[in-house]
Image (cartoon, rainbow, N blue to C red; front, side):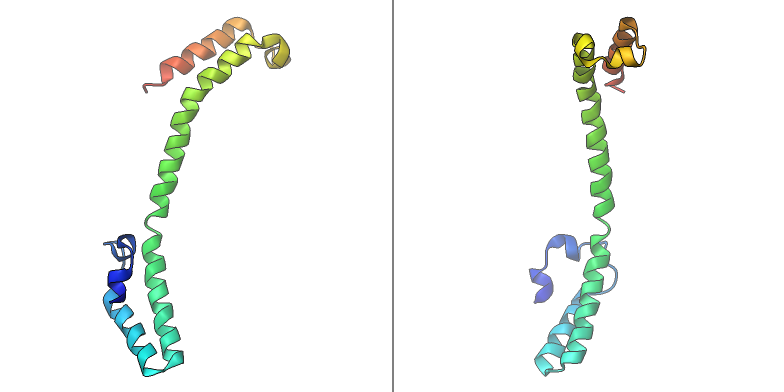
Length: 116
């Protein structure tokens, strides 16, 4: 009964142990009135759910890192164009002795690196 109400990512293949038996144990303990045993069974159920939830987080972290890196490649072109166009106002190339020709090479590299 409880297992049918849980989301599919909780009941998925990555969940170790038998979730149905743990859930039914928790329901049985609650109906019998044993509050201490019910709390223990509930902790067991929460432990199983928490263990299954850890398998999704690394995938989301990797996806977030990849997405940020991909967007960085595209946005880098616009940032370099702004640095080239407003060279005098920004004064970053002058502070670090970056020549205008070098900035064009950086821009060219940023455009070429996108497909790779």
